[in-house]
Image 1 (cartoon, rainbow, N blue to C red):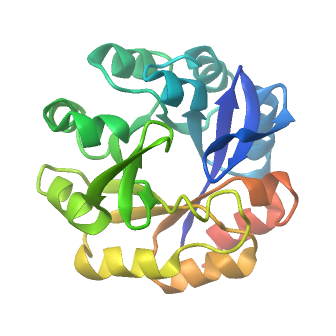
Image 2 (spheres, rainbow, N blue to C red; image 1 turned 60 degrees about the horizontal axis):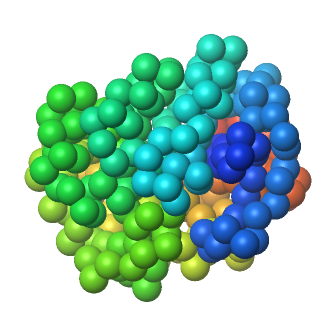
Length: 242
């Protein structure tokens, strides 16, 4: 059974999607993210990935009110990311109702701080964001490339107690052209113990089944839902089948 996690990406308090992380490709899907979250909850979805895109760019949490709104008015388990780069940011996220937090840029730039969060909150609540561009880690809302190779980077953090990793192939994100199955197979072959959350490129039911067949335990998807490429009913049926 594969865990399906819809994404709600936020700019200016609105639900949006980008293509390949490019802020100039912004499409607004709903002015009210809470409305979107309630639709997911009503369909039988249990968890969402909430991304503060303003925060990712500004390097500190901005849209915490949206997080608080969804946490207060739904029963969804919320994994929150985007701009979490200090103890203050992570405190804001958890106080606003996040069940889990994803750290991407901070893990690449401040290992000591990120590891301290894993030690304090545990590997079930702190998720490593490992976003890939040409098999290298990209940070700061994908605006900045690094020389860190994805697979060794993830393997290194597993030693520090990280259990869950969100990996987005940026070239696939928002393109509806299929996920980076080969990249995920490579990660799982070399780090079989990781709970890998694949993100980017999922466009249809077949893409989900390909990822499941590759051994991927969870996926994040956004545009395919918002563009009605796959229904919430189908997603829930896939997730809940025996």
